[in-house]
Amino acid sequence: MLKGFRFVHPVEVRFRDLDALGHVNNAVFLTYLESARLAYWLQVTGRRDLREMDVILARAEVDYRAPVAFGDRLEVGVRCASIRRSSLVLEQAIVESGSERLVAEARKVLVYYDYAAGKSLPIPEALRQKLLAQDADLSLEV
Image (cartoon, rainbow, N blue to C red; front, side, top):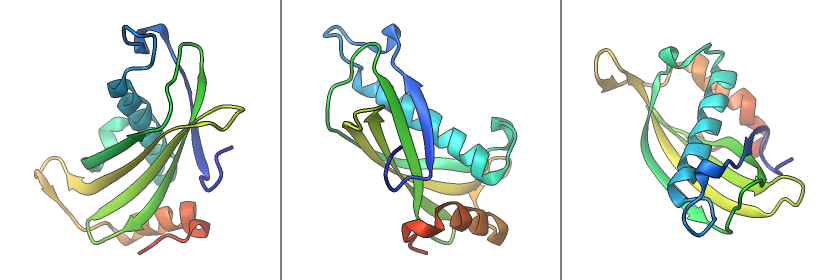
């Protein structure tokens, strides 16, 4: 289990994820991170599917720490690091299962968003409380 992360999403590296050198392509890491982010959001918010998505990705930063190869089993940790009026910051880490070898770290800014109106909105208090309940023991900055 990833230390400091209460939510962990498993990932298995597939052949199609590899580049010509046999490593996972850097763009594929974003797919792993996004899959984990969506799973986190659905679990924490109680949403049932992506049609109920109410955040939009505004920024993503990834630091690559180690190469990943075919057959590696990974775990992606997700946690909320801070909540503002209409945005929040998620931190993520990808480690190799078992060895806990860190392969990538990410930081994302999400904006609470009304897709029909095409604009950001303040994060509702009920959602804020769900996020705080999920990651409260991780010294979340509010």
